[in-house]
Length: 242
Image (cartoon, rainbow, N blue to C red; front, side, top):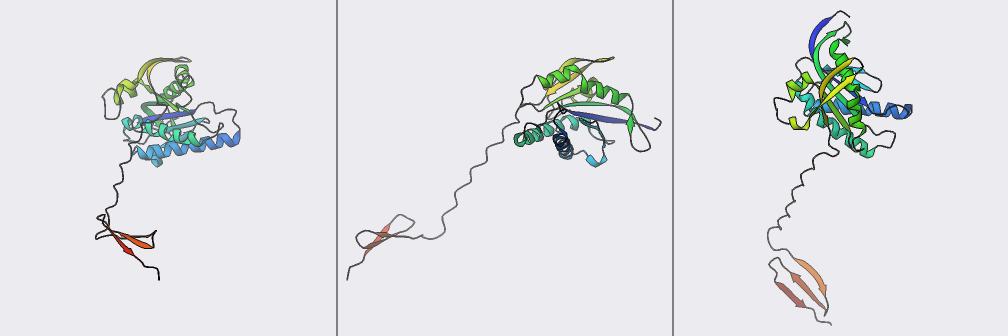
């Protein structure tokens, strides 16, 4: 395919075990994944509408727009995706829970006349996403783990190694990737089973008492009335029976 050659970051996402759930469930989880990605991109300040989004059947491939910060696809995007998937799964049934593998790479891709993309970076991305080491990482993770992220060496070098805020290099580990004729090393990070605990809400201060003495009236035994004022002094008035 001839076309414009341009450097882009590319992301691929695949839903684990999407086959065999039936069409209604598959349509539901595909729609939920698209919503999760759109909201996560927006939170990461990457224009979703400017992305090229391709359907992979069991997932999506996203070509980021020119100028998109690659580091933002690692953080906060990955954490945003994981948080939204955990929220989705808490309310989902057995057929609509979602766990995903995610892969990130970058390189020169060719854009066709209709915006379609092709090129070696997309081949590398697909091999990373489907690598047995990545599939095993998610399959052997606890059920509460919703996502695994794999980065190419190139992507890791440019986004993780510099130690940018919010990206912890120690959270990634290097793995050997072998998929068909493709052999390389890559970097994996697994999302925690639960996100960081929300900070406890500050205690709401008690409302200040109204200005001036407040009065409470209670009926008392002995045919009297008790008036209690704010400073704690009680005035007792006895009512005679006539």
